[in-house]
Image 1 (cartoon, chains in turn yellow, blue):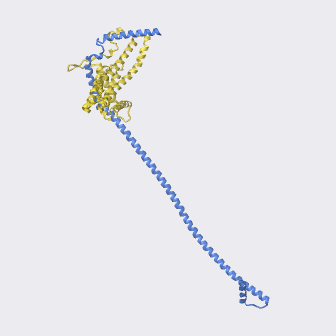
Image 2 (tube, one colour; image 1 turned 30 degrees about the vertical axis):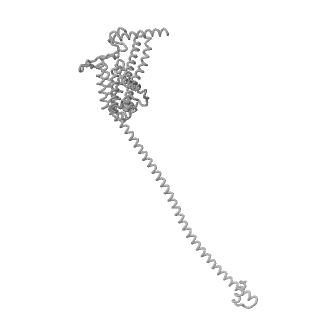
Image 3 (cartoon, chains in turn cyan, orange; image 1 turned 90 degrees about the horizontal axis):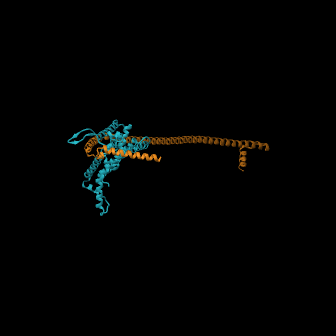
Length: 250
Length: 192
């Protein structure tokens, strides 16, 4: 095992390494095409192929593929309507894009030998920051300075108000961090765990392989659930933050 | 069993240590790849590019297409349900009309039967009355004839009685009595 590891990295965190496939430079910035870029493009291709192919017939009685696309569509549409009300449907394409992109990136990462784009904090943080900026922008655009009332909950004793406002402010500014770390940590921890146990299965003598291999099978199932669940949670939180901005319901 | 588990644990620990040292040795000594700031720019660049393209294509083509189909289907179902309701209403109305027509026909039939019965009864009544009248006339006629015959017979009886009485008297007294006297005597005895 050690000999194998000498020329190729098999550590549990080696799977997160960004490898350049094609060097690219734009205005002095490094924009190289990497394994991460490859999986983003792959996810884009998979999603577009799925949705465009599924909706090509526009049939009244849907095919199986069309039913699947409609299922995802209605699932997210319902989520947006439940959280934002019917007028929130104008944000639906954006929420849908976030959900399906993260979902497919998570699921593509489950392919052995694949790369999990969402296991990188910079990617999840970019998503969370986008959500936070868009929500804050909508909040101020819709309510003007009245949006600041979000930090002053009603029915709080005057004495406690300064403290509450500070807490509300901190919790608001910490949103993009908790939002991004939740997804990133879940994806990274799961994949690291899988790799560690896969390492055990390889390195142990034959009679010891059963336990970690069995664990791998079960844990892979769990990771699939986590991949879908975390995409869902990220999207639900996006809706909740948007709702704060659009309707100011606290 | 216990020994096996100890060996397993030892082997696992060894493997973990090995993996960890390997990771440290091969990841360029910079710790987590996620914290390598050199990789941020290319990741962000491609993320913006791919997510931008995804958002653009989904919002412009894919989602409106799916949404249209869903809306159309919902409309179609609503329309079909409305049509079904309309047809059901029509059916109910036709059924009600039919039942009304049936009831009307029944009522009319019973009226006709009643009228006919009454007509027949009146005709019969009329005929019966005229027949009875004829019979009554005939009866009266007959009675008059009988009465006339009886009167004639009775007057004949008086003549016979007078003849008989004349004959009896002439035989008894040997002399002829006039018819007027006999009649007088007879009517006097009849008057008693």
